[in-house]
Image 1: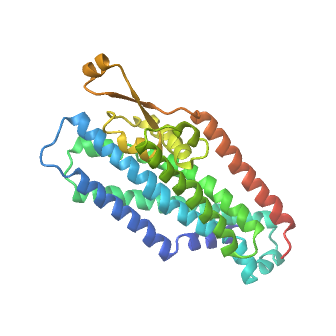
Image 2: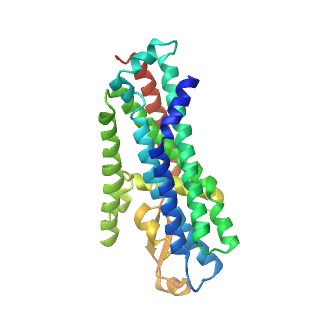
Image 3: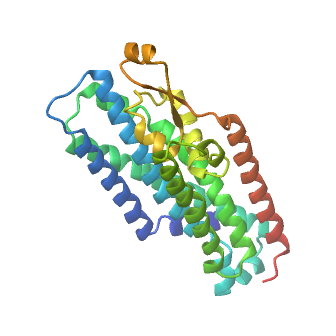
Length: 305
């Protein structure tokens, strides 16, 4: 199993994946540095909240989102389907390796490699943001303090999407056949609800609560918020949280009494959207991850090659 793990780790850390990870980190760091460059710095807490929200969105959509999901999906769907299609899986099972140990070695190699790529991308983002931005030391230390939260959330993303990719790889006999459903999930379940939510938001927000039940951006956004709460959470005024509200539906804006609005210097109140409790989401996605992996291991034991 050790040899298989090492080989899978090398395949996961191939040059193209490293380039994608570094590019995502570079792009994220440059965007954050440019956004953080202001002539008149506002109050410390207000400026910090703006920078944190921008960093959260960048990590959520770019690094632990598009970059990590694409790499995990591409690698995971080829673990078994690629070997079967190329005929090398017969060679593997002919050696003194059980099918379970073969798949376990491949899964562990992919998970370790994916996490290494995520660390590489996040580190690059922070370095570029620090070098190209103009931050007070205390601001940057606070930005950096969320690094463990991003790793925690990235682990959740990696485990779930890798489990789905591994299951499809065990079922399919060609990598492309396993990869297409993964792309369909990303487009239909991730991108389409985002567009629908933006349209509903522009029309007043009616129906957003119902959309939350099928919107993976809201599901993973809630789990992302849960991870950040261990290190300070996501804070800000209704204006500062407007973009996360539109993109991830993690927050909702509620009109309040005009007298209260006058005292709070605003006409809306931003609260956490708990349409689905995060404990339920963690339980459901955790159970799905275990089921996907268990089904994959069960299928590989009987797979005809």
